[in-house]
Image: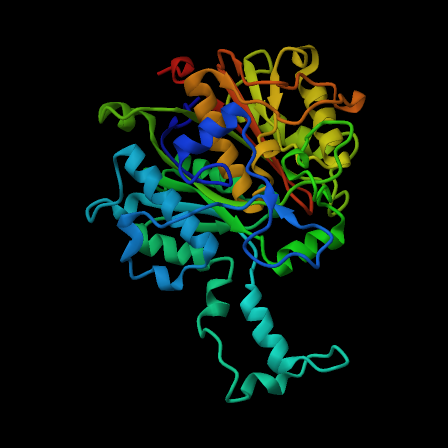
Length: 432
């Protein structure tokens, strides 16, 4: 039997609501610091939900300030550019002329986003008194808008922009499966490398749905917490009083490379990206099955793909959105897969501190798993005060816990039923 190609994580870059780089983000998550608050990016006073998890005081790093690609970049693309640059710098390697064709790019891309100013312009010229759309207003000579606005909002716009900027000339793909996007992008990267399509990958995700269209969509679905007066406590995964998630934004990228090549060049290795599992629940567009059926399949596949067992698992970075149904379903899945190990394996949702980053969530949380393995720390599940008997797993409560993590699991369970699970292994556990 041919051994699967070992894939090393050698670089991490993040832009999140709790930090504009990996170091700050990880320090905040370890300390349980919240990045949730009143929305500042646009006027949300007319919405039932007025809180979010925004990226704060973000500035492009100097290396990007004069990039010709910036004028084509949406807000989330700028986060992605910064996170990608940090990941490559952290890894100490990037595409060069002689190997760019052996680099790949796999990204979980967010949905279309329309700014408040753009909506106001459309309303001024194309809205009638009875609420109908008057399309002739768009050809009014006084109507003026950014000609590349529509282009930059396409799902693959970020893919094209980022591959150009980073000089990637090999395999490239954009994944959009809602909240599972970032995780599935990393799984896609893993499979592409095992097939031998490329030797290096920049893989991750980006999103920013903190705009009028994004916020109103989730409000209509009833998925968001309405705790406007206490935003820092609004995201409370697995707590009995949870009432919805807090919408966030951000980006994260990991540098992946062949394990032996990474060792040969003396790279620091955070962890092995060891396993990938996927399923489709097909239950309800906003909920996972009560018995955890879809997530069970994804978790089992990921563990099998990594040749790992529940006995080896030390930490789970849960999807844990803080919605009643999905938290209950994920816990049912963990109990089913872990069996007698469920009381031992540490579980936390870092969405409790940084909200739900949608297409970027799985990528950020994959980076969190790699950092948890490196430092031997299970980050805290903040705001967990009242246990839910339907979520009786080993929640990391109160503060982060120092533990030896041989194997970690990250779950991303998307709207529409897409489920992604990834498995990571400590470098000391990797057999040559």
